Amino acid sequence: MRKPTILSGASQHAYFRRLLKAYPSLSAAERDRVLERLRGEIAQLRLRRAADRPPAVAPPPTVPTTPGRPNPERPSRRRQAAALPSAEPATAAPAAGFDPFSPNIVVVVRQAGRAAALAALATIDSEQDLRLLAHEQRLSLNGQLSSLAELRAAIVAAAERRIANRRAAAR
Amino acid sequence: MTQFLAVSNRKGGVGKSTISVMLAHAAAAWGRQRVLLMDLDTQCNASLMLLGGDGWEKACRAGRTIADYFYDRFDKSADDESHYVINNVGDIAHARTAPGRVSVLPGSQQLEDIQAELYLKQAKKDLHADAIAVQVRGRMKRLMKHFGMDCDLVILDCPPGLSFAAQAALDLADRVLVPFRPDFVSQFALDRVALLIERVETTEQLASIALAQRRYSCLPNYLTGAGHERLLIDQLALDHPLLRTRMPVLDSIQRAFDWDECKKSMDQKYADALPYLRRLHGEVFAVMQPSARSA
Image 1 (cartoon, one colour):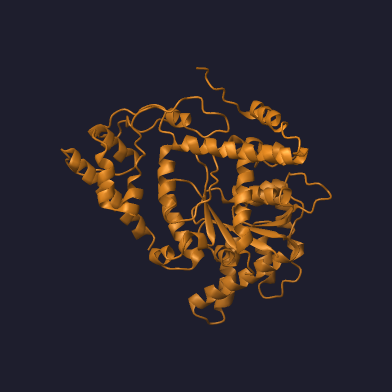
Image 2: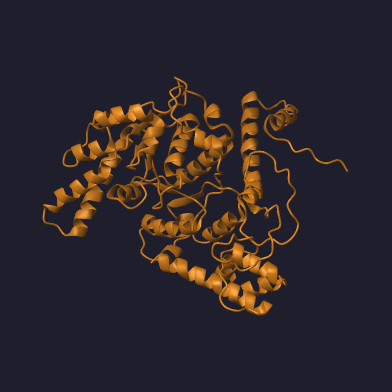
């Protein structure tokens, strides 16, 4: 199968211009307005897709960090740069695998409660993935957690602490 | 009818002045509006972007800044405010026949001192501290409102923090745009500024106001596309009305604020940021239209 061509900038503009010429009832001014609108919509769409895309490189497994030692799971500047939004097309395919930003545990707890969050986490059955999710979502895990159930409960408790923390600051 | 749009956040470094200037250019160029940007920030960044260093310094020497205006007019009638306004500023070329233009009431580093002086002046009237603050804010609000006479849109570029000027601007504004960086502390800043804008005291009271009824909209700014941003934006969207537009980090935006004497088109100035600005302009002014009210 032929790989789809991703157009951007002048080539994208020329493509739409050719396409719109098929509609002679459109005046030049109307065509320009449609082109401008399309340009804006596509730029926004690319930005949203970039924001929704999981990191291009699968992060290494989580290990507790020690002060002064580089944290292997913190996304590097290079990896973050790979996810930068741009008006240019995304050329790298999204990495398949675990997305540590989904589900958004704080949002699930706020909207549907503790049980729903635990149910959402129950679909993740790898300790490494759960720890990675907690790390990337800034949900700190306290104490010795030996089982997956304890880990999930600790993640939800951390989300609840985070919510309470924010409420307290708004008083 | 003149509309007042405040661009505010108690947190600094979120892009208030940048967004204010971009919207001023967009409203003049595309909305064909006569826009006044009132620079309430003592950093004076918006003034520097629109006037350049020399132009701003000349305005300061001539006593044509917001601090001069408040000081000169605090106890008098404000009937000659046009003296303080500098017209046709910025480096966007507008067609001679088009009504759109950008004017600025330049900012001043003295504004904080002046506010303290105005407070002390009122304090001599032997009032309670809270009553004095209310009077100073109220007087500043009325003085700001005078600038609505000769323009279609007044953009109030607010300072970080909560000065009298910032509070007066929030009181006066028909709509408030709150740009924010999607980071950990931004959520606290949004929660707090939302209470002020909606004039409530608790998050429970705030939650009782439907998102669609709020006077403010939040703008995610300086996005890099990282996953943490998505998390935070989703969390904030539960409590605050967010615009659909997201402003990315772009070199073309950073470069656009170098002062340049040569006039240019919006395309030339904003380059690949143009689609984002078009969308922002369209969205902000769409939400402003139905809510227009006299302050």
